[in-house]
Length: 251
Ligand code: 16G
Image 1: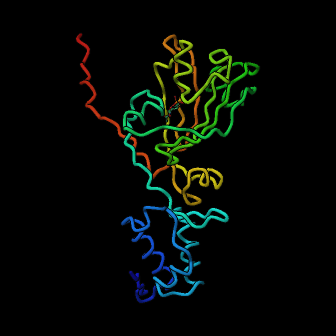
Image 2: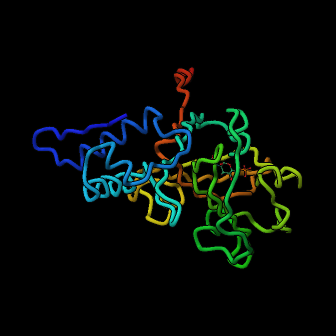
Image 3: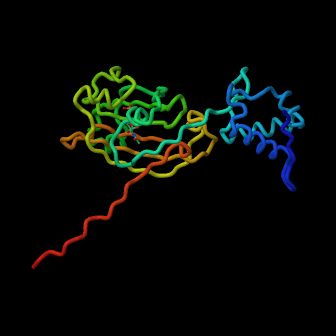
């Protein structure tokens, strides 16, 4: 099985290797192990030098297609599930993934009780001395990173931060504080390098930055969360309706 590559006129040979490897990955050639064959084997397959291959692999690592694990080799990122999310429903990540038949999991980045930042105090309508519970998580679907979420909850709703397990909304619901209304702001952004590494995407990749403020039925604010969703994994879908006709007031 050879994978001969030929550079197009004006194209550098290593870029032709990038294209050839990407095609092979997309068509699932190395899918079984997710481990890229050894350098020597690939050089033979592609009939290129080590230097050319290494340059191509470095580009694919930058693009987030491959990643290197020290001492173990070069791996292919698992295909990320693409998720369509109605932007008008107040659901939790765990519920959203369950509805799609995907298993939600998290890697915890931060958990603790802090004095609020001015932004948190303002968004939560909390006093400057009212402590907040902060939870930062990398959220995964079937093991693939989807989003980074940093939530702040006034302590009075979650006095025992350790009681939060896999789902923040479940923990709030079990104390009778499930949010019933939310406001969400969404904008495009580029991820910082540290977040790109967590999300398994190339540096400077685009992301959807979302701020959610969630309220209880009595109007008090229970959650302020900032999230960075992978742009290649999430579609936020909105339903549009005609607004009801404006009636002229009768005189
Ligand atoms: C969603 C919410 C987030 C909330 C989380 C709770 C968006 C953009 N964000 O991801 O604000 O904190 O769900 O999920 O939808 P959990 O109950 O699974 O922890």
